[in-house]
Image (spheres, rainbow over the protein chains, first blue to last red):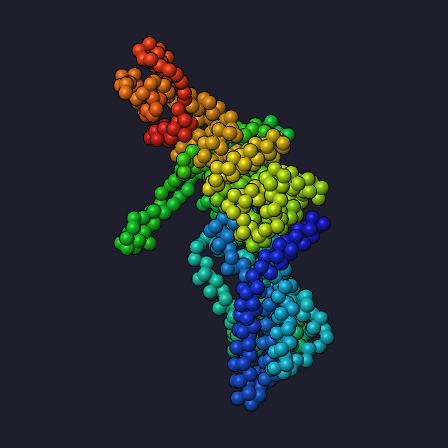
Length: 267
Length: 326
């Protein structure tokens, strides 16, 4: 266990050092992460204002709260692994990772957490500014706020495992960008990034409940906003637990199959 | 400790690659029906390495050297055959196995590009769970042997190729592997740096008794480091034995250098005249006739000096690889 903590600490330091090397790319990345929810916020505020100040239970202030918190939830849960894996497979850095007596996922986990720690203060500062400009209205209960923390971590875990597993498509094809595009469209639509899921037709909401995306972003967000009953919250937790199991199993199976391919066709 | 560091038997690796001619028409045809071809990268090779040995693994590009190294280090799964490396089956990639080996590839790098080598070293310390005292000692030794002092704090991207290679090698050896695979460790380096890396590799072998398997295109590397060489060509094992015997086995001629007063004489009846400069003739003669021809030369001509040599090792190797069906 101590060796493990040591490993993570060391990986943190490395990731910190590497991330801080590039201030400009960090700034560009931040802008990207702020811009998307900001655009949706402005769109939906405008729509809400023009339809009498409220749509589907979301007031203009409600929309502001939704998209500002969405920005933070997305920040906590997102990963960039799907953009990187193809490069690793092609240029052989994965070979070095496979020669190490440790599973390569650990360095990605540590890297993910480290870079989020660096960027979180910026995100919070930006969220603060948006609060001043857009006057969000939010009335969560204490229990739902408390529950939001573990659900946020579960959401991160699900998203990390799903995206890490999808990234392994690079073992089979050199055209991973098509897969990535499809995935991101689905994610945008079904995770609540485009609009609150309650605004969708009932059928789509049902579909969303069976897909992993809601449990990666929307669910913790709904808890933070205080929009769920205790029953819904517990059912959501169960769904998250199920998705953790599913995504972990998938990750194990796909990883083993992928490494088998990699070591068959030439590492 | 095992009596055998590496033992491989009838190891094979066959790649299936798709092939097609250039042009739109054949592109369409291959879209419908993909033609594939089997490439026998490694074709039933067997050899053993005893602990502490330094063995040169040579062959032209595409001979199957890197494929073999990748199978032995566990990156590639063979098509057929058996291997036992430090008592493990390498492609199972057991942690206990991976902790005892390393692979240095001259054309690839494991160091993190944007940060100083020292940070990558620390990461390897944690990954290999090297005890603090051992790490400190090893880092000290490597720093001294490779003269790393001023390099460790510079971002890797700011290092020259040679400097980076030294850091790469150090990073790969921090955990004191008992078995080291070196794939072209001196490629692209200048002569001085090659010599330094060579001296270091010899020193590492001496100091830690590690087993080393080395591929290189520079025969100087092999001559300086390896008593034993394994030659492969088209995936097949051509030769396994002492370097001196390789020269014996594959050389069909000797070189006679003799000094006369000038370059006027016609020596073509004694052998093939390769060159003459300043009265020094270089003759190529069939190996079995060397003694006889030498005698005739000494009797017939006013010889000032005479020297019989083996041809340069590069030439021998080149001839081996030139043979089509071996």
